[in-house]
Structure formats: structure tokens, C-alpha cells
Image (cartoon, rainbow, N blue to C red; front, side, top):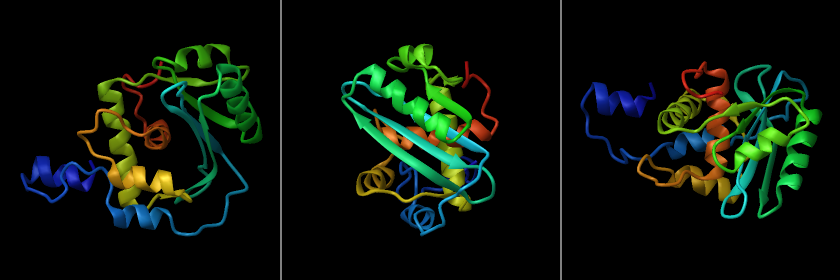
Length: 188
């Protein structure tokens, strides 16, 4: 469990910023400069958005810790064929596991891809497990990524009480859950 969860739930401590998902120190450590990975194995994760949300594609190398992001792509308000084409391009450039959110607007994308994808069904439980897995990556210093201003702001502002978790965070959370063995009700 992430340290914040242990402090609150096990040790019954009242912690400052108890609804915050990530500490600024952990975000800053994850954002330290790093050499772009040139070798896999690769994992690409996609949070699909269509009209109101963005589609966010992340690719990480699992070759060594900390896991380093090789690719980040954000699409807004584009049709399904363009989303599918971008996912397929990234998947072919970085062959390996492809995990695509299948809830809601992601279903038609997964169904029409010309590459093999593992669907990620987002439920309240699978979302919580994925976010906790991402918290652990940040706390342990096991993730490196160059965050743009929008992504960094979303990470800093993210709270458990949010009705909507930013697309950038969910794509990262799918990555964390994918190799953390979060198969209980997460993947279809």
C-alpha cells in the first residue's frame, strides 16, 4: 500500500493533504532528466477520450528501474479513425504489450484496432487499484517521465475526491496496474 494509505488506514494518522494522490517531491523526482530508453520490453497504455476528454498514449520501457517513458502523445477532439491510427502507429513503433481503456468510448476503439490490445475495464475498484499502483511507483522512485506543464499540474492537483481523474493520470495508472499484477477484475 502507498505510504499515505498506510498512515491513514493502518496507523490511524491524520495527514496533511490526505486526499492528495501524489506528493510534489515524488512528482519532481519522477520528472528528473533521464536518457530516453532505446530498448524494450515496451508497454503502451491508452486512456481513450473522444469529445469531452483527451486521448492520452504513454509508452514505457520495462528494461530497468526506474521505468522510463519513451513516448507521450495527447489527442483532443479527433475522430475514432485518427485515434485508432495513432494507437496503431505507436504500437508498431514500440512493439510489446498494448493496454487500452475499454470503458465507454474506448470500446469501439479496442474493437476496431488492427493490432492486439488488452482491454482495461475501468470500474471504481480497478481505478482505485490502478491509482494506488501509480502512487507506489512514484513513492518508490520507480518511474521517470518528462512532464509537460499540463500533466505536472494534473499530477499535483489530483485528489481521491475528484469526480474525474485527468486523462494523463489514468494512462499512467493503467501502466502501473498493467505490470503490478492488478488482474483482479481489471482486464477483460
